[in-house]
Length: 228
Length: 228
Image (tube, rainbow over all chains, first blue to last red; front, side):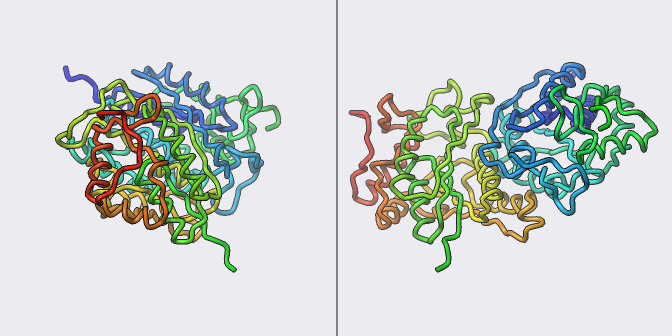
């Protein structure tokens, strides 16, 4: 029996990354989950990431510290209020270059493992409009990865960045996840959770998530503040 | 009088980045120097970076902590000996995805400043053969930057990654730096310096540097261990 092919899976602890992890597992990969403590307001995500990683059964889960608060510039990493209604254009919750940074670290880990597959739960349908969630971004990173690395240049490795959710609706993502046994009660998506980790119910992320469950005719098992 | 255009300059404290900083200054940019404490053996570089930044006169110098030792995989970030003779192929001092990670952080800072220019002192002539020092890597990152960011997608900004040294010889870099007043006595290039920060004289980086000074008919003002 051939041993499973390793993959690095970016895991925030939200609905999308939990689904992505389940998809990578269903595709037979050995899972190396990667999370970041990046100064986010919603660090409760990391507890969710730990729970999701444990439940899914990963080979390894690493949490890397990087201080994006050093730069700020986002409602998630600086003292800028999280909006409670839809924004025009790219919202202030956009974190400058976040997915570029996350994928760069995933690439570093890939070279060391070694692995040639990275999974990221970006989605360009029911999303906040972030530029680093679009297919053209993912393809550009993949191209960069193959030029940037010893593995790509000398090792004959071709890196693939898998973004299995990229063209799915939130409803479709939830249905897919449920079919794979994802427990969405473990996940946390809110940009501004309360001290107990409950979702606000009104930020972009909560609204998109709740609408996805509603479209699927299901109740969101996540916890929300009363009246949120 | 128009105020100077800001640029983020990656500054390791070595010969190449000090020269790059001087070139950015000569081109009239307002300098925002960026260094990383990434678990490198040669952390003495950071003292050099501070001295170089202060001497050159930067608007700001930030040192960001990122733990690349979490992944290892390089003689600079793990317990792998630094070679003292030339390697065949890409040497073990290659740090997986390092320049991709560094440029990603520079990009994040650019978006926040805001700035659209990044300087990096990579060189693909007298160098260690790292894949992320080549022109095709720099161009691929530039393309990614313009797809990855709010500034690039919505803000009408076109990011430029300047790599002014990329096709220069080490001798040419040194001559250019001296003409701009760089004090190479402040810089540190060694991959495996001693406790006092003196160069070993025999690692790839020391050898290329010493050969550059020799080719220019000059004495390297850097400090080396006796007999190194």
